[in-house]
Length: 187
Image (cartoon, rainbow, N blue to C red; front, side, top):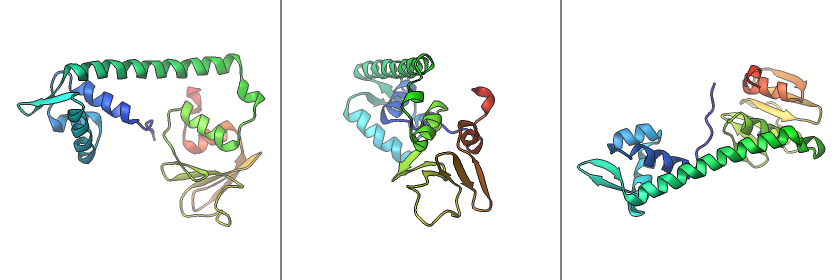
């Protein structure tokens, strides 16, 4: 299953402005930007209030200010991509993570980010869809076996339970990737 990176507000606005460059209807904008009707209403009211788009003959168009905003948002996105690429190159040359040990949960978050898998953090757990990942000392005490999938990270081993069966695996990147369904061949 492919997980998309969670989009920021700037990402959504950039997508909407990009789509409106040559004029677009609201329903096409909603589909193209991959947002709900409620979000479409929210963002359209903001974009109109900021004078980034205007409506003419039931079509949405960029204003000159909207064109400038789109150009800036595109530059920002390319700078962020360049920053991520540079960080990967630096990590290959200077593997600081080997010197400064990470917590097991931070290592999982790094794997998720590197593979562009969205996750959310709640308390001391990371959730990828309905899979909960937590460190053994921070998991809700007394609840090893729960009805949803869970990974409990220890120093050397991890416990994976899908609600029906339990596996004890070595706590390493390949085990984590296998649980998350990340193809190892791409690395």
